Image (cartoon, rainbow, N blue to C red):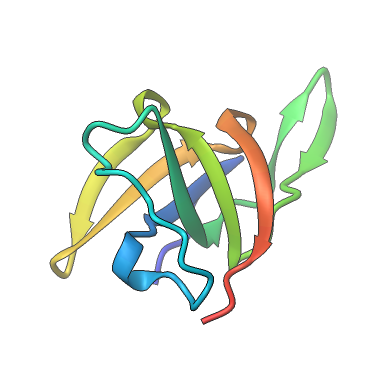
Length: 97
């Protein structure tokens, strides 16, 4: 569906009603300082100082990033964000739906 370039990621924010039985409550995305999202597509990586650095996250990983680092867009009535891999604060593992 998406084919990001360089170290760009396409992520889908996770809302509270999309979470598994763990019962985690996610705050309103518009007012949150950080956002939890699932990686739905990833670029191959980027070059730094002449060396290729591959993207380390995988599709399906759940990540946290700051809301102001994302560019929001809509595709087929679904909101997605695009971020650079370096904007990720932490990786929480795979989404277990």
